[in-house]
Picture: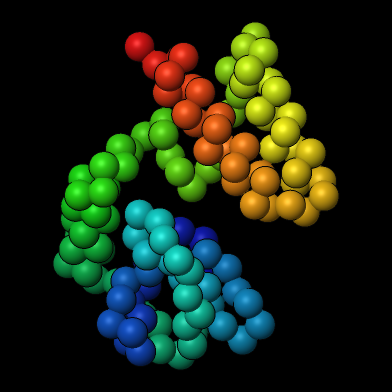
Length: 124
C-alpha cells in the first residue's frame, strides 16, 4: 500500500486516503483531510473511479461550505514565517519552543496567531 492511494473501507462505507500502518491496522483519512481512522486491511479494496470522484466532490463541497480555501492556506500544514518579518519570526520561534517542550496546545496557538498575522499583514 502506497501513501496517498485511495481505498474503499467496506466496514465503514467510506473512501479514505491511505496514510500508514499502525500495528495490524491501515490508517486512512478522509479525502481532503480530516480525522484519521483505523481500518482492517482485509476490509479495504481500491476505490473505483466513481468512488474517488464522489469523495473528491464531497471534499470540495466541504471546503466551500466551511470557507476553507484550497491552496496556500492549507490548514493541514503549519504556516511558514515570511522571511524578513520580525512578527512572523517571533511567532515561529514561539511555536518551535512549544514543540521542543511537547506543548502542542501552545504550538497550535502560535500557528493560529501566525496565520492571523499573515492574513492581516501579508495578503494583498
